[in-house]
Length: 222
Image (cartoon, rainbow, N blue to C red; front, side):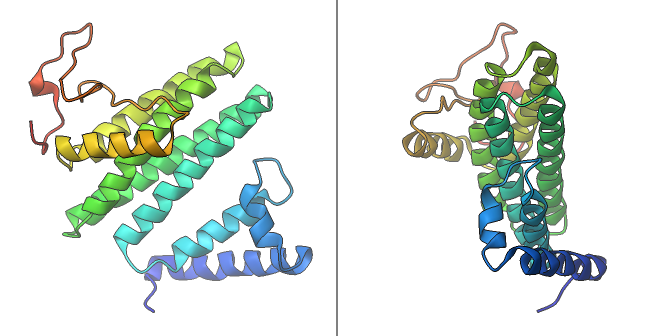
């Protein structure tokens, strides 16, 4: 297995951190940590496991896929904190971490694309994740205190921009298919495609700003 030289130093640190954590907490530590939230004792182990997986990834597109999963997990952590009435400071920290990891996933996928790699599957994954993330953030916005609302709005905007970047690499039909499949798998979430994409059925919707087909991200079928 070939590991990127830029990762080699981090591999050693991440694996060492994971080994120490497992030795301290027993063989089930890494498994138990998967459900840990920011502030929990095992949360550091959860993040260390993620970094080990990333460090031994074999390709740029593999990195992007793993980072997409990590960003989604950060959002689920934010949702869990919102459900438990966590203080605003913890909500802001979780939200900022989510935004950073989502951006990192997108940037990694785009870099792989620019390097000539086939990132279609990763872009579909990021498109699906951004649709799920949009729905989750709408729910989170109804639960957080007023002082955290601006931060959630910022995360929603970052997610919308991320959707446009990812979905701009695939066709409209593929996006509709992704949305419909996600609605089946996540019936409790309100899954929609943000404007200027399709939002209901196969008809193009407009917003109050009267967006036209020219607003579609480049590289898509119209």
